[in-house]
Amino acid sequence: MAPRAAVLIAALALGGCLKAQSGGKAETGCRTCHAAHYVREGECEECHRGNPGAERVELAHERLLTGRAAELRMPDGLARRDGQRLVEALACRRCHTIGGKGNRLATSLDAVVWKREQAELVVSIREPVESMPQFGLDEGQAEAIIAFLLGSGSPDRPQDTYRVHFTRGVGATSSVFEKECGGCHRVLGPSGPLGTGNAGPNLSGLFTPFYPATAPGDRPWTEKALVDWLKNPRASRPHTTMPPVALKDDDLRKLVAELAPVDPGP
Image (cartoon, rainbow, N blue to C red; front, side):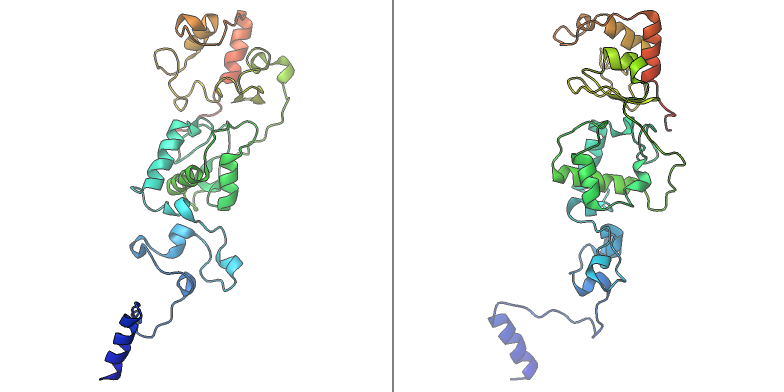
């Protein structure tokens, strides 16, 4: 029996198979350690980031993307679609710019997601800073959001020329929102974060197109809708737990100003 045939029979008898050789050409970069997959989507680093030219593992895995987050190049994939659905359902654009659209109340996410480690991004979503709502997302949902953010942004997109910096308590003593609404609600406004409550919804970006249409009649919030709501919330929603809030005209104007958008995006 020819030697080549004998080797083939032996391999099959052991339940294995022979891996086709690539003409003697040695693999380089990521493929020296990892099996290739989704090769039609491009090079490894286009989905997983990293630094394929590095020889040390910790450098080769720089800002590595794994799990659902690595599906950023698959616009029709489940992770990207789940991420988009979550971003829209949670109204993330009421504070952040995503894909060039959104309010400028907080950091634009189009470039920053490309500069952070995946673990940092997951923590930012699941254990957010004080003024960001606690959405109660699991790790898989956070990774899906990351995949969508990465697919919507670009590593080459320049950072915005502004820097958001808030200090708790600035202007709070004269704030109508802090006094009348802050026990149940929070908001990011022109003067920074106000309120400490979580019983009611976060009102950041209330008068912008990016806030959910939750005014009576499932309509967008306007100044008039807010004024009518404050006078008698139970007139439109009999089972709401929010009581009427009696405000003088001057205080109403101050409250509307505190809820006004900050340089809304496109």
